[in-house]
Image (cartoon, rainbow, N blue to C red; front, top):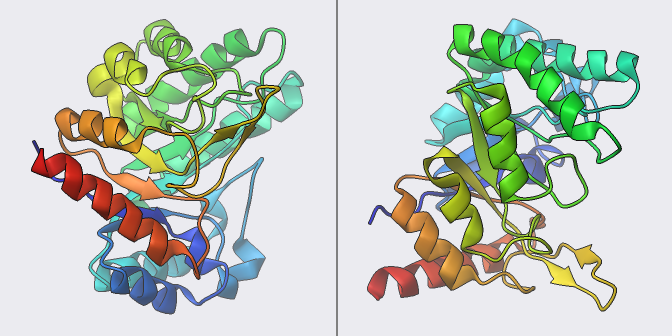
Length: 273
């Protein structure tokens, strides 16, 4: 089994600190890599956020400084945020989302990334079909650029579970379309082991947050270790996948140390068995 590489969504730090300091703080926790954001304290004029994350808004010299900050801190840049509503029912909004994805593909390398991460878009009648149509536009461009596009399945979106994600991959038919697996996002649909059985080697990134489900079946999302995700089982399956980075989210600066300790404890326990 390969050791789990543990990292963080860097926005937890970049929204409150200049990127060089944010990178030093992340590295100070002993983390190995980041998911690169489109939001920085010192670059407010270029920041973009959901539902149109557009790293192309950052000038070349700014993107280079962000890339250098992470590299100088010894942090791998595993992927870049590009969460866009690619299954929007409104044609104009869907077009904006697709265009933002294309800009993200063109810009990813400037930030040191060869992978971008997106959602599948809000669930609605016909949403899955629109999602497929969007990725059929996006993926030829990604393939030509050598960029991997990871979709993050989530319970309230057009791709809410592992089986629907498998359907998206098959419908689009691109070798560059992969999966960022967040067990908390799909806990209301999928037992912890099922996504690995259904998606297998297409899982190339993972998120670490947790999930609580109330009596009405409504999920909530605390930090990893505070909910109902079966972390030992998840880590066991993740280790068996090979080298899949695990990226912490839904944590605060003042609590992330505890989240890291929790995950490292689970990893050590699983690796010792």
